Length: 364
Ligand code: IPM
Ligand code: MG
Image (cartoon, rainbow, N blue to C red; front, side):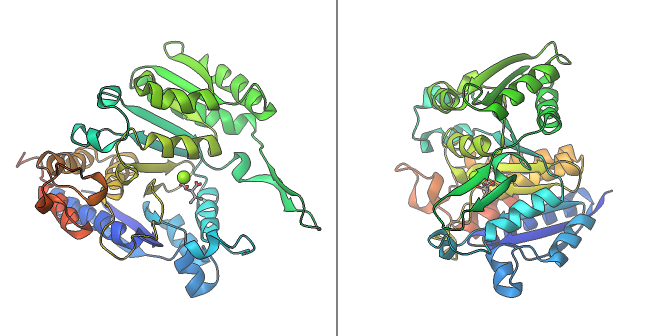
């Protein structure tokens, strides 16, 4: 029987609404499978700035370092988006916690539920059977490179795109290891026709590939990859790429799954992992119970599997989500014209359905 300490970082916007359901699902799993999960909530993002003037209070970071896993909602608030002069920003909290915990590998599976294929703007026949696993480098690249500054006269701004061989090799290795358990194909995405850092990326990925002779390695430029992803998603199995290219490509890839509201992620590395939906804080729908909690719930499945090694428990969460979708339950973002009005549920109603559908192996 496992005993685990989980930190919940609800964050901003719809974050508190969706993490509440992630937590309830974990509580249900704990009670059905006989585990003990302790939860503690901490501040991050705009919520933390409001209370403490910093987007990642020390107390949050310390609690996270001591925990076994972290469930995060989302950070971000519109008041900063339209005011670039603000020095303290919610996103800094997220970037700092990823860096401090050494979470260099951001794993974003593109999971396609057949029932939701219609929710995508892409043609169904392109999507059915697609299954892509993204490895986005998360603690390097242009998000963190130095120097970064605005010139004294304000006319020039500089960010630096920097990668070391060590940083590329460790994320590449994770991608190849995953490919060995799947279809043994890795696409490495870069811009090596223009960027020196991408040439180092490509050279290093080639070196790591030597240790995985069974895996087919295909290099692709980011512009082409963005196009190929919606032209023929089924050509991809595992994709490995840098921080910013991965940020953009995974939002694009969410459309293959039908909705951004369905995609979970795991950030892992040297320390405690963070599990979070890939969607943002969605301030436009916050507080209205319109948010889709399924991405967060599926993130708890990744937590159970990757951080706790509880495979059956993880599968029970995925099965519950699968089951409620098969029964026709939807949130607004994944509904269609054909969805009966009484099957379009709010955040709490669909969260409750998932909880009710989690069954322990004895019952299955
Ligand atoms: C993500 C988000 C973050 C990122 C933002 C909120 C800093 O878009 O997790 O994909 O760019 O990494
Ligand atoms: Mg993003």
